[in-house]
Image (cartoon, rainbow, N blue to C red; front, side):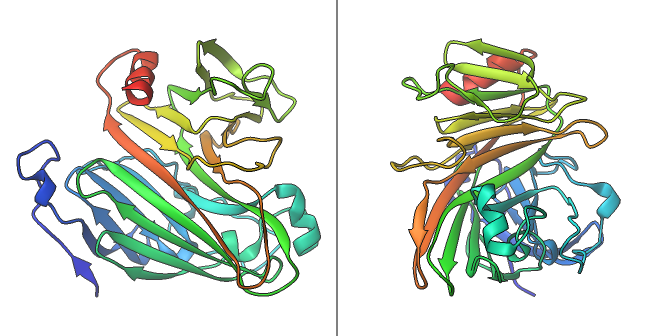
Length: 318
């Protein structure tokens, strides 16, 4: 069993900068051989059997920010590639979704190796490296480096696509964090957005209680309709009952998928009450032997103000 542990103290203590990140093998909700990564302030739970980062939470909390489908505890992927199982947690897909049909012969469910296969996991000094099998349709192998910062309440996931075989393809790294039903979700809008309204609605349904206050767009989960909002800036914030999470996409030049979106918010209707905070990288043409990568950063803090807009301002603007 691989385990690296250290003395746990809060990150605002004088000794916080000397805390090693701990990586410990655990069982989690019926899945064996999982990993708990901790830095004394925050924890991440990785479940290689289903290829997910299943939870991000404050140290000692039983609940966290990520949505988990408790009905599927301990279950594995369906061997039938035409059936999709929604476990929750954080994962990655290839973008744009419009390319799926050409590469795998169907629009849905997502490509097998990205979403429906177990992954290999190796513990490191500050986290875990997850490696997928090679996807048969895209010819791409995914490696995700999941690490906690040793000084800050921050998780970083560096996602790498390596083209192993097949014809060249134009693709983008797309990360999806499924999160619990929030009090409110926020997106930072670009100061010079390419979108007329500063954002883009990708589905027909209107967002629930959408507000724009300067550069700060916000909404709540729609209970009856699927909603998706995209932007061309890099930061979003999820405000839950007790937690705040900021998610940042890696900035960079290039052409982005889905009409030029760098960040996206999706809200799922009842009876599956979750939201997705998504990041997208620039499109790149990859041939066998090529690699592309993007890093997504997650900052988690306890909530301290009753007004979710105040919390969003605090975590997004400092």
